[in-house]
Image (cartoon, rainbow, N blue to C red; front, top):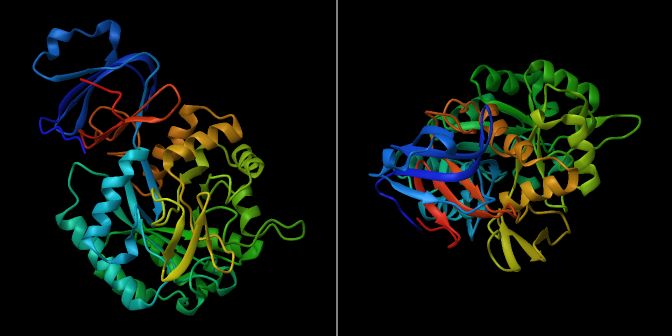
Amino acid sequence: MITDEQQELVLKNLCIYTESGIFPKGYMVIKGGKIDTIGLMESFHEEDWSNMRIIDFPMGMNLIPGFIDIHIHGANDADAMDGSWNALERMADTLPKEGTTSFLATTMTQDAESIEKALSTIAQYLGSANQTGKAEIIGIHLEGPFISEKRVGAQPIQSVKKPDVALFKKWQRLAQNHIKLVTMAPEEDENFELVRYLKGENIVPSMGHSDAVYDQVLSSIQAGVNHVTHLFNGMRGLHHRDPGVAGAALLHSELVAEMIVDGVHIHPEIVKLAFFQKGVDHIILITDSMRAKWLDDGISSLGGQKVIVKDGKALLENGALAGSTLKMNDAINNMMNFTGCTLQDVVKMASYNPAKQIGILDRKGSIAKGKDADLVVLDENNQVALTICNGQIVYSNGGVTA
């Protein structure tokens, strides 16, 4: 890992994708971990910044906001459910290689003791070890156990529970109020009590691992559901006599939809269909990756279940998809290749939209003065050349020199 204790940087000769538009040839000044100045190269005077580290980039490089992965279980042989600081550190150290600068540590359906250990550990890490020099954990995504037994996917069915407000309150206390998003099956939630509670607490209630029919989806939207977990996966699909969860997600702008764009979880043409229907403002790119990401093919595990990884595809022994090994930089490139959308579009889907959805757009998710300097430099092939987390260079592919 490259460190920069000074945390005062000038990045120059970059195409900068800012919140207000694109600077075709610009520069940026970073001070104290924040974006301080953005300007065009025609107004750049090097002598003004002579006391700072200046990095001059070759032609064709793009500066974009860091990716925010709001649905990720693990990477590099670590998982949020391991319940250890070492696992969280390993994830936070690894993710900048793919351009991810912040993420929601995501739990899964397990026994209550395992979930509680994971929540407590993540909360303690957030309070003590969530430092610069690595990707920042910005909260917790509780995926399950309040899901449908009919749509468990790779979640162990024996640990599924009915939605329970009292139990959730207990878990949120253990998590020190860091749970930001909850994946659940709202049709299992009596009178939508948990949905309404989450909405009232500014926690995102997400429909996922759900067997809801269309009318139940409409009722859940009225109760407060505004998010869909990994669109098309783990849900009642689109049928000509019942739009189901997937059809409702495509039809209703109230719902922001996560998508795993690895070419495995969703066929490329269905990705294209969803993009054309939902539009750039209502899609969030996620990885839903598990511990096998950044490892070679072989035997891995997810929630105590054996996982076989071959050619990057992760399957349980029963053939069910077991999360992904997708990297965020590959997700954005796949999205552009599958749909013909622009880099500006995928920046919205991988950075801006997730920040907006979980309520941190005031400090992350876009390039603007005063925001956290969470930044990624992409080369001419849209590969990660440099990653900066909170103003500190944490990853370089070796082709960038100061």
